[in-house]
Image: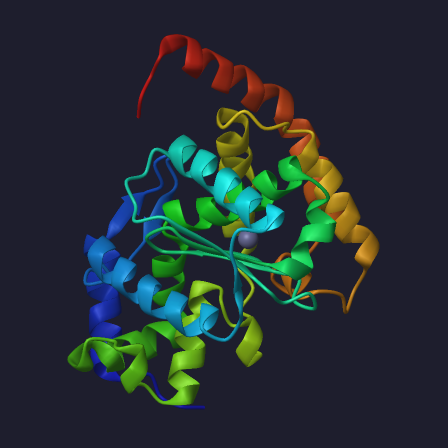
Length: 266
Ligand SMILES: [Zn+2]
């Protein structure tokens, strides 16, 4: 076992003391190393986006690519975040995955489209991924465990992905949720997943999509079984999610209706 370096412990303690923020939609307190600011994370998100999307052909102008763009714009607006949004559909029929990096950099691999089944299904996946980004889950993961060690080691070089060893780069990409193509898939915690499910569903409802698509989507995922697609390795227990989402729908629909009626702009 490698010893945890002393600077790491000191900075981690400092982080615990100073960087507890809350997730806007749920009020949950989240951890963030003080230097992982929004602009820093957005920079890293843009680098990781280039790195990952550069490995595939980006589809443009097709019906599916237009749908990803359309759903993306609607979910982005519903999230209320002022990001530099980008939406890409990657030509990868064997990759069942999608992600949204810090700062609103979104990619869908074509392999996930059959499971989405329709535009409402795409909106559910999009909402979920966008919720990971708006809730700062990437920064929180990078503030914990092995990823935090690497982040701290990289502080002096500005955490430039291009200057990192392959191993370090993969850990950082894994923490951001884009490790599929390098084989490092770091599952989000159950807490992050539940949060992204709930906030994502809220965004989809707010954007005018059918919330009932959510349990149906996860039931289709469940049918794919173990050893299935990338998305399931980081998003376990689809049947339980479907059940929980079905329970959540009436309350979230009512709350979003009240929110729209009140004209609240958060
Ligand atoms: Zn997730």
